[in-house]
Image 1: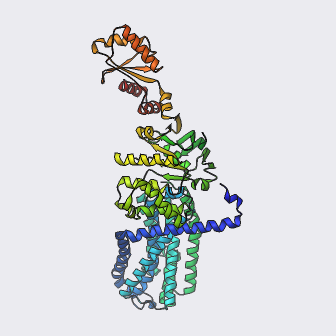
Image 2 (image 1 turned 45 degrees about the horizontal axis):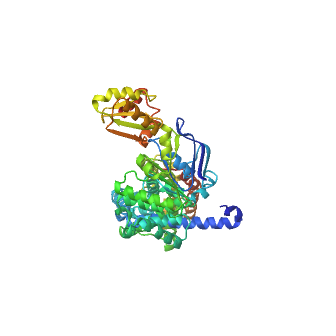
Image 3 (image 1 turned 180 degrees about the vertical axis):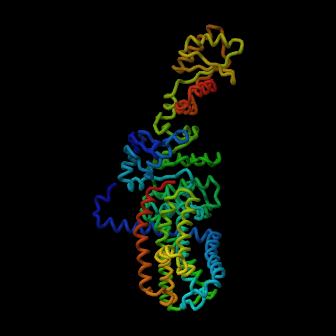
Length: 281
Length: 325
C-alpha cells in the first residue's frame, strides 16, 4: 500500500512526471476530438474571427489609412492583420473558460478529481488542446488576410516568430480563462467576465488604431497593456522596425511581450490549479 | 465484519449558517451494498463527495479502504470509483473511448486499458453500440457506460450518487442487476437514493440521514424495527366494528385506529405474533370473526416518514397520523 515510502524519492519523481505527461496526452486528445467531431462548433468558431477581421478591415480601413505609419505602405490590411492575430490570441483563449465550465457542470471534473490523475493534467490537457485549435484558426486568419491584401515585409523566420509569439501569449491567456471558468459558477456570469476582460483590453490597444488619438490617460493604459505590446511586437516582426513608434525596437517589444507571457503564466498557472483542486460541480 | 469505510464526527459547513453534515459518524462493512437514504438536502451528496476526496470535511476523520481521505487522498483515489448524479461521459467520444480514457487516467497502460475496457463492456452488453458516439445513446445507456467507466480501475469501493434518478423502469432494473453483480465481484458499493424500494431491493445495510446526522442505521429489517412495532390489520364486519374496537382496546397500550379508506382496524403489534394471537382470542371471546387478518412490518416508506418528520409542526404530525390511520 505504501510503495511510495519504500521507493526513494529519486525514482518516484520521474515516475510522477511521466504519469502527468501521459495523463496530459490522454486529456489533450479528448478535448481535440471534441473539436474534430463536433463539426458545426468547429466551423462556426473558425468563421467568427474571420468575419470580425473582414468587418474591421472594410469598416475602419478607409478612414484610417491616412493616419497609418509609413511601414504599413498605406494599406490598412498591413496594419490590421498583425493586430488581429494578437487580438485573436486572447479571444481564442476564452474557449478554455467555457470548456472547463461545461466539464464542471456535467460532472466530468468531479470524476477526474476522484481518479488518481495528475493534478495538473486536466488543465494542461484542456489548454494544450485549445492552443492547437487556436493555431489552426490563426493560420486560417493569416491566409484570409493574405487574400485580402496583407503582405508581410520580413522573412519567413520573422513571420514564424510572430505567429509563435501570438500563440505563446494566447496560451498564457488560456490560464487566465481557466481560472475564470472554474472560479465563476454561472454560465452568463462567465460570459460577462470574459467580455469585460477581452473587450476593453483588445479595443483600448493598438490592435485596430494607432493610440495617438486617444485621450492622454487612456493612451497611457493603451500603450503599456500587454495586448498592445504583443501587437507592436507582431508589427515589428512582420512589417519591420518602421511600424513601431520612435524609440521602440523589434527586439525590445518582443522581449517585453515574452516577459508579459511569462508573468501571466507564473501567476495564473498556480492559481488555476488551486481553483481546480477546490472545484466541485 | 471489517469496516472498509469509517466516518467519525464529520462536520461540513457551507457559508456561516449551513451545516450540511453535523457530526456524522458511520461505519460501512466491506463487500456489501450500503444505501444512504434521506430527503433532499439531508447531506447525502456532501457525504459522498467527502468520501470520494472531492470535498474536505471541516471536522472529523474519514478513512476509505484503509487510507485517510484528507492526508492520503491519492491512495484513496486509486481504490475508489465514482458515478455522480449525472452521467459524466463525453458525448463526442464513443462508449468504448470513454471507458478507455478513464482506464488510462487510473494509470493503466494503453494495452491494459483496452483489455480491461473489453472486460467491463462485456458486462453491460452494449454490443456494437460501444463503437457509436455517446450522443446517440438513450439515457439508460449513458448511465450504464458511466457506471462501467467507474469500474475500469477495479475499485474496492464504488460510490454511486442517485444512480437511477431519471431512468426508465426497464433500465432501472438493468442497472440494479449490474450493481448486484459488482458486489458478487467483491466491490463495496455505497449508493444514495431517494427511492425507498431501491434501497430495499439492493442494500444489505441502510443509513438514514437527516439534517446532516445519521438518524438510523442497520439492515433494512433492523431499520424498520427501530422505528416501531409491526402492524396488525383486521377486517371486521361493519356491524361489529365498535364492539371489536372496545375488545381490542383492552390488550394494546394504544387503542386501535380505524382506517376508513380501506375499512380496516389497525393496531400496533408490539409483540408481533403474540399480539396477533392475543387479539384473535379476545375477538373470539366477543364472538367476532375477522374476515381478514394481516401482520406486517412497516414499510421503509413508513420508517422514512417517521424518522425524517422531526422538523414538521405538530399540526403536520397529526395530519400524517390521520393519513396513516
